[in-house]
Length: 286
Image 1 (cartoon, rainbow, N blue to C red):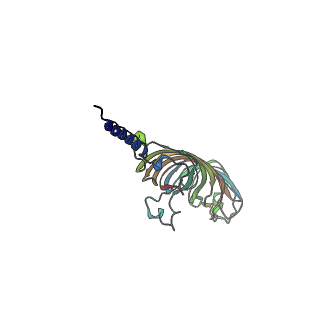
Image 2: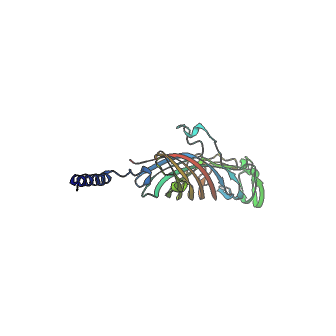
Image 3: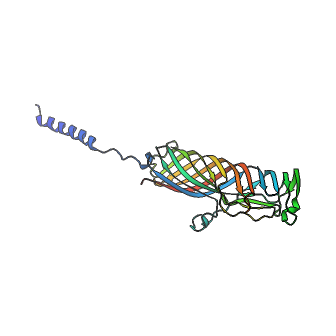
């Protein structure tokens, strides 16, 4: 005996299940799935190493070049100055803000505040001449130099960009989510990204130099240009906060370094550098 009511019940159950399945919303897309339209900003510190460089000094009564001059940075270490608004320019720092034009590429502007200090009392070969008035302190070094070794004592020269070696730059960088290769499924909690970028800009140092006992020039001055490439790892927490560790290599060419208050006195140099940095930042949509 057929049961027509059974057919109705079965039909209703099948239809209900189909309808329910159609109405269940898909799981929401994660915030970290896309970067396009997001802004970011970061702040942190760096250590830097510099190649040896030839430094030329010219001015009234002198024109000489120091060959293969060694230099180093001036680290502050872990310090409250990094977060003290009145002292944030004292340590070596990195600042950058940018915008993602698509999910992988961002454009940004920033400031790398490094510090460059010529190693004092090293001995380097000198080429050129010094002809200072006899009543000036620099007269003690008068002469013609042809690969003559000279010790860089303080009465001969002190030379540093410690206020600092300011690289104002702009560029483009790429970020790729590496989380799935590490077994991370919820990137809104933690996300691991690989980053790389290229930048270019100008050098705007405040150079502290004492050349042959002359009074130093104490002001910021556009001195040249630089280019750099970088790569690193970005770890993003809870969608909006990140720690970024990067290695950066670059080239700096400064052909107009102000050294003294006499307008004719200047220096020039070019060198490469290698920078290690750790910064903290945020990423968000307006």
